[in-house]
Image 1 (cartoon, rainbow, N blue to C red):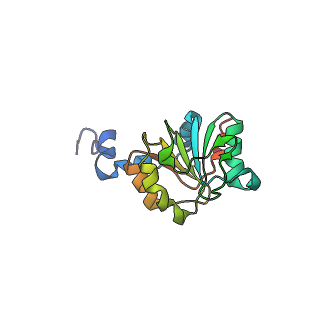
Image 2: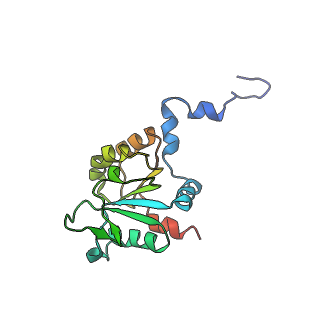
Image 3: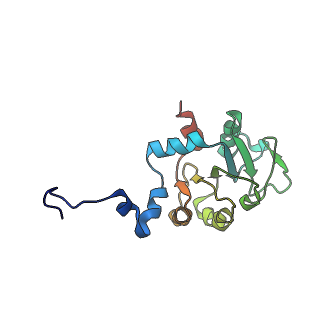
Length: 166
């Protein structure tokens, strides 16, 4: 306590140190989410659906992202016979993707997200962000990603947030 200040002095570094520092990677503030969306160039979409399912969000969201110039890496969890989606070669595991990925966009049920944690944490380099689409939250997985230094967005639509940039 510093009587001349009338309060206990604190520092930003102190508030982010220790076991709770990973919580800063859990993004909820609009400005932080905008920064992630604005800087994204390459998005791996886990659970993407093929053109035959173009009326479903797991297809039309990544299709929109590709239409505005983002590189979309399709990572379907079903459709074993599909070799291309959105004119891009299908990859069966995010850890098999060559190069940097800005966002791993998850179109998976919340209960299925945990099954992708090890694969995502095996990526080299790690993605900058793991984004769980609208309606999808998994706090345990989010904590694991954040503790690995990955930013996490839960329960938000990447298409809507991208459109809201303008």
